Length: 135
Image 1 (cartoon, rainbow, N blue to C red):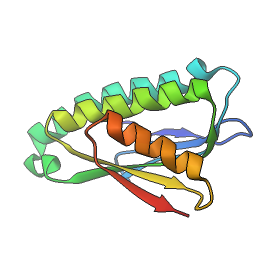
Image 2: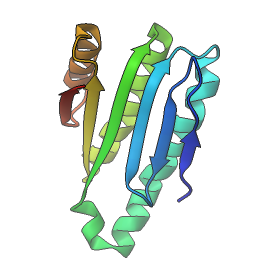
Image 3: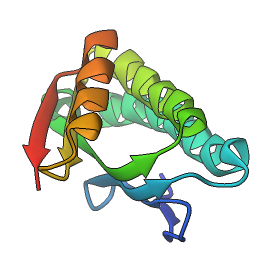
Image 4: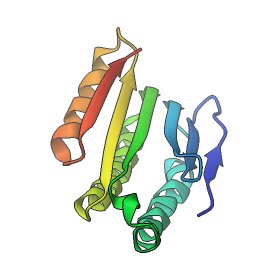
């Protein structure tokens, strides 16, 4: 499966979704001018990733036993981005509910209680386990 790499800008986070390297990270600020245009390729990639996981499981039975950690490390995100973040988490939740071990690493600045609370709210909405880390 092809990785997805997006370079951070002043208004959008960096994205590294690379199953070959085992790196799944979204970091930075999320307030792109066209939020849909930014997040649609990520959501499409996650749909392909779900299919890839089934292929991987069929070709490598140990794949279902491995834990796949997705790191979200936002400095800020606007309300429109919040909806797309939930969409991403919901797709990861579906993968987890299909028998794969997915976990979310929610990183936030130690003084940013709002970002911590946002992660806690997301954690209540899906069944994927969250690990919280103050930076």
